[in-house]
Length: 519
Ligand SMILES: Nc1ncnc2c1ncn2[C@@H]1O[C@H](COP(=O)(O)OP(=O)(O)O)[C@@H](O)[C@H]1O
Ligand SMILES: [Mg+2]
Image: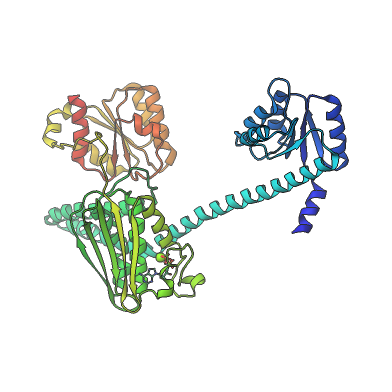
């Protein structure tokens, strides 16, 4: 270590900016420092010093307190308040060296002082010590940055690992959904009497698919301040994802869910916590066993209590206060177990719950099982901001739809066909690309444009939106997206007429069109 430092000093002793209005002194110090191997820059005023510091980024500034115009203290304050120049060491040269002076200097951010007149050996010693401090600070900053980065990376890895664990369950769920629809479609093709069943199955399975994709995409969403969620929905979504994994391990999941108010946490965050606890429970149950999930209101406090209990191996006493530590695991390469694990699941859960003003605790008995309890605050609705419910009266649309001219832009043929059947073929013009849509808008006017923003050519949707708005800022564009979690520029969400999430309810579309007519 000492070796490297010494070597570094020889290789690159540092760049020093000397600031003094006395030209003679400036020259003398500059020569002295260059003889020691430093490279030097000079400035004779505060303004000049600021300019050179910003441009040349010296490692250290030897700064005279008293300067014409902007003085040393001011230079110090400016450099230390700017992210780009904060790291430079400032050695303030004080005239009198009084205590008051030093306090003012320290407050302005100076790193060290040297009183005038000074002896050369003292000046050189102070410069060396400041530069040592700087290189240690730089190294620490860099290490810290790497640490934060690897933490993000790990949390991402943990999420990917969880999704990986669940992938077969998700595929299974999708296949079941498709099996029902495809089976009845084949039957109905052979014999139209199965048509009503096909319709029923398609509707229920589409709903199921929507719940599944909804639970997957909320997993990826970051929790925002002030977010809230329906605990029951989230639990339902999490169960959708782990059901297969539990079943194939002979684990029964039982529920005891009571009606509770909205919880003050985002759906994505709560789902992440519940998923982690469920997967841990599944891992802990070696052969057969059960997991119980309960939700209730807790006591007089405005809290919601969620518990996840299992009849698994339990946690040895000596591990109980380590399980929430990052990387503590008895699984995978780190923990020597056969299951996969990163040791991050519970620490992520802990941080999420803590950040929402909640608590997470554990009770466990080896050989008997483990129960995690979460207490979460009830969401307190801010005043105002209630969204009016959609009235969804299809009859209302039928009376007026003759008046609307609607352009549908979607790359899915089936969706174009369905929308034009629903809205009336006479009123609807369909186009499958943004380019064609923009073309048709040149010659015809539309009351509404229904635009799929997530077309195969991914930039097409957003780009088309912008171009349509540019051509006609009043255009009423209803956006359809497959996934709300995908990043949608703020400006687009704000300037669209309405926003529908696929698969959407036709009644909702009617409501949007009717409301515009009434307005
Ligand atoms: N329900 C549980 N039953 C028994 N042990 C558990 C349970 N949940 C967590 N643990 C223990 O806590 C450790 C840390 O859990 P976690 O942070 O989720 O990381 P991982 O599951 O990746 O090991 C696990 O390795 C396991 O030893
Ligand atoms: Mg885990």
